[in-house]
Image (cartoon, rainbow, N blue to C red; front, side):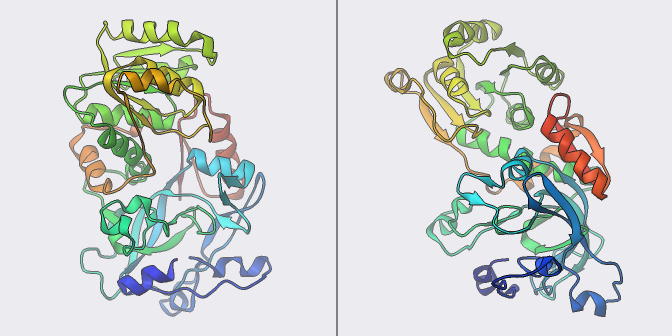
Length: 394
């Protein structure tokens, strides 16, 4: 974990990584486990984690934890979901400028049970079930001080190299990033707070509310949680589009008013915009959430959104896109982006507790935590089709 976090909050400061190391040393850097403190506490099991060691290669190997800081908790992982970014790292060993240069523990959508708390932790106790927010910001930069800690330049985020993730038996994490789950909210639902947070943050940025007609581009996991979030924020009409009929059927079952199948061909955009608007009964689209991030999807969103409306970029399918900005500009369509999320876990948990959001139908596949099952789970997630959210039960 980050030494600047330890300095600013009284937490731990990990050992510096060695210049080079063999496989047996991998777990000693940035959040590994099995430390002397564990042995002293009578813990005899060896902590294991799923390590990304090369393209398309995951190995379950020992993972040592740092000492428990006064403001940290030790959490036994119980539910960890697979995100598209996890699959992308597995296939490519990089996302944009984030490059996996050394073995890294994967996973960041997670929930578990607290086994030990630091001396300064008063709001949590052993046995509490918690959902974990995966990003540790510095709390000193202008972004953090201004309340937009998700933009922190020194963010330490689970499974974003070189920081290790959470697909492990146990991890150590700051207590203030662990949120207690109420009775009736399962650990799997707690793990789903991470993808749901993306949808919640997007709805906040886009200004979704009870008078907002919403268009969602893409019915993948993020598009579907954005649909659920938009409904929870009160959106009276929501349309969703995708190239896949199965995903559209799922979206309809989750409450979409209209589900429109589209193509990947740019030349079809004008005709598809007309069909989308017709599917909503001619209602103007106030907000579009592009959860795919391709030139075609963004162009469709820009053309479909009413004058004075807003388009929010959620997905990042392409780093560079060619889109009709002039048309959007003369209609004063605002374009905003999101990066991760901020202050979303309490609201997500309340949505789950109250029943305003039900993420359970999104969990389509479950696996245990063995070498074979980890490999199979990632294959299923990468294959897509009927797999929406693949979840590990540890």
